[in-house]
Amino acid sequence: MSARAAGDTEAGALGARAAIARWPRSLLGRHALLIVLLILIGQIGSALLLREMVLKPRLAQVADGVATNLLAVRAGLASLPPAQRAAFVTAFNRRPDGADVASDADASPRLTALERRFIRRVSQRLGEAGMQALWRRAGDGGLALRVALDGDAHWLVLPGVLPAREFTGAWLAVSAGSGLLALAGALWLQRRLDRPLSRLVEAAGSLGAGRKPPPLPEDGPSEIATVSRSFNRMADSLARQERERALMLAGISHDLRTPLTKLRLAVEIVGDAADPATRASMVRSVEEMDGIVGQFLDYARAADEPGLREPVDLNALCARVCADFADHGQTVQWQPARSLPAVSGRPAALRRMLANLLENAHRHGAPPVQLRSCAQGAWVWLEVIDHGPGIDPAQADWLRQPFHRAGDARSGGSGAGLGLAIVERIAGEHGGELALLPAERGGLCARVMLPRAEP
Image 1 (cartoon, rainbow, N blue to C red):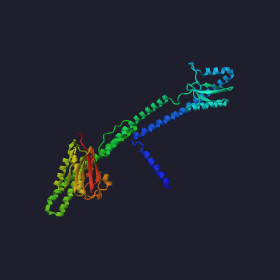
Image 2 (tube, helix red, strand yellow):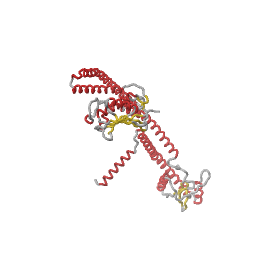
Image 3 (tube, one colour):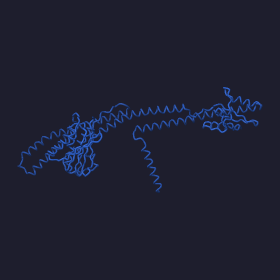
Image 4 (cartoon, rainbow, N blue to C red):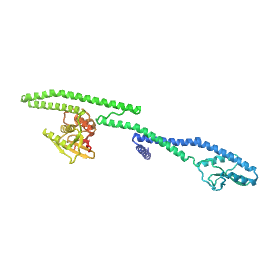
């Protein structure tokens, strides 16, 4: 393939992609455009059908009748004495109101398409009878035909046998009105179909964000009602499975708390009798198991936690959580925003969400661990930044799922893989979202965005 041919092919492909990009992206826009095109095609087809099936046959019929009458008039003129022919022509051209019509108004008339077809048909019939046709525009706007007899030329003015326009304003008005009515009805019907689809998309987005959407109305057309009914059943099934899993985790965690307490008590009783390294290892193991059990309980609690929402000052909440971590020897560099709007939420849940992010940063990242708050527009967000090895960006969605861990991507170790899942769920219940981003100087930046409280 030559360079020019390749260039033409590439230009054609780019033109096709540009044409596709100009098409409406919404279902309503595409259906509206399709309806308009179909109505236009239908109107054009109706006009062509009217022309071929009505106008042309009627024009041929009128032209044949006019040609027959003109031949008869010519025969009548030929039978009259030459002195009486002028009076006959004058009487023929006189209108019913008594007005005489001049036959020499325009020797080179501008003809409409309908008049050209009419003259062509009449001239053909007259030519078959041996009569030469010469036409001009009459004074009243009609057509005049020359009849030559014995060296004299007589102009016969034809009465108005043709409409002024091939397609009148009434036809255009009726066509436009019917097209607009069809378009309005089609758009109304499409809106009725688009509304339940929009509700379905919104409900699917809420379900994907971890929130239980309200039940969809199961009315309307049978196909839409079936889709809504199936979605409601799926949402109920997922909610039931989530409740059962949370109940199972809560039960297991509750049952494990007793033997863990006994193990911790046994380690304390043994005291100095055991090897210090062994005793420290046992203490760490008990603490790790207790942390895992705590994550199970937090996840189960986040699945169905009652509580009224109230305005929450995130700066004050962050300060308290940082103080708690400092009491346990874990330093957090707290950088509050100067003016931070309040958010609407459950303080206990938001505190648990922030604690999970900081604990995840200390366990899997590297110091220093930073906490920042920011606000812009309708959103308020918190950022927890560590300086560890970070994560693969392709694993961001994977890590937000329950019981999923990054493996070798993050150092450190224990945990059930529920920390980020708890954060994701609490953020979603508050209308926000969790984003896992690479930090500017290496490490991981966990950002939680929350909508600001309504004033």
